[in-house]
Image (spheres, rainbow, N blue to C red):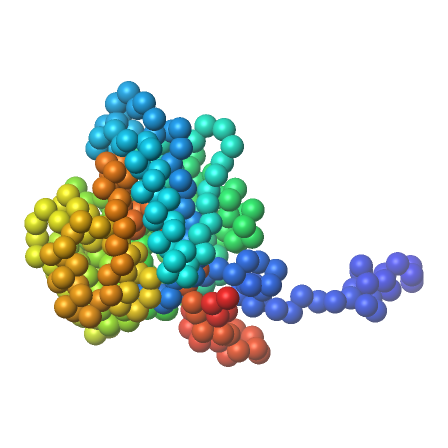
Length: 334
């Protein structure tokens, strides 16, 4: 027999098989990352500080903004947003591509959806945002965050259309931003992870699921009054998740009061300038941190839209292989 077949390279003595699963390698070979619940303590976010791309827009409506943001003021508000996250104990990573940047790259939440094992890369529905996913994919690779799947073909998917109901279930919406083909690809990837998907169409003129429903604890959600899709409301009831509906009014419409990020159980970071909604939420036992984003909101989004979630704290996985793991678990927050 040829002696080379007795070498480690050909499986001979000294061959070292790779026995750990991908999920066990998160935090060692791959960077710490992963999400399996919307309310677990937030560890790491991905942001893009708006740069020259928001200056001198000839027609803000043509790039899906509501009005021209003042660049200096928008950047100052974004800087304060990042500092507020850091002060809350959250690590902030930035997408800072070289060269020309599309005008809406600041809305990182649309460009990825995190699972316990890595990211599903979005594919924005609008031609204005086409290619933003490539810039985020580059940054994820640089950070060592695995990309499990990129939406392809005619599929479109934006991360703000998906959320974790519990570690075994994702609520996934279809509408103008996420089509049936994109949703099918997301559902197929999640099925490989043992995660079930509940589909729901969005009401007419809704932008994203994120704008209608936010989950703040394992048994508490906050929704837009009268607009939470029936399938979503039924899924909440089935899991004994109470649904709070703040009073309708200008704070929800213009102040984007529900466009917040959950920092941990019953603890959120919400847009400043919404005192009535803040009082309503605090009376329900929700701690509300605030930061001003009204200039950034001229671009048609707020804190939730601006924030790509990379990691939330998860329980440690026991050794011994997938059969011994908690469903949809992940390595602990690091």
